[in-house]
Image 1 (cartoon, rainbow, N blue to C red):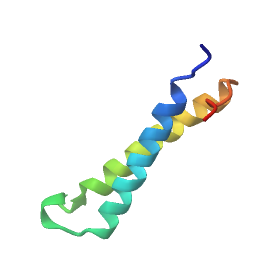
Image 2: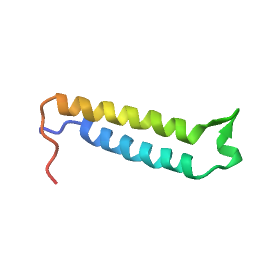
Image 3: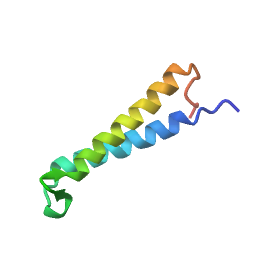
Image 4: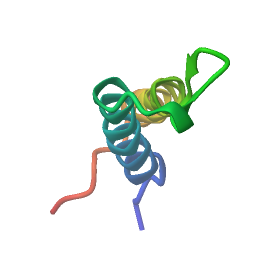
Length: 68
């Protein structure tokens, strides 16, 4: 089949992480900040890192991304 599952997983987590991190920076609501930590921003960064690692693994794996 030739589909490397790391491409769609990496793209999905990177996109969701980017959206969540930007949301965490823009919206400063009290229910999203616990003990002085902006939970949305922190989890957005974690999702970005995971998505980036998946994309890096897909690039290093040597397979080409799926054609659209």
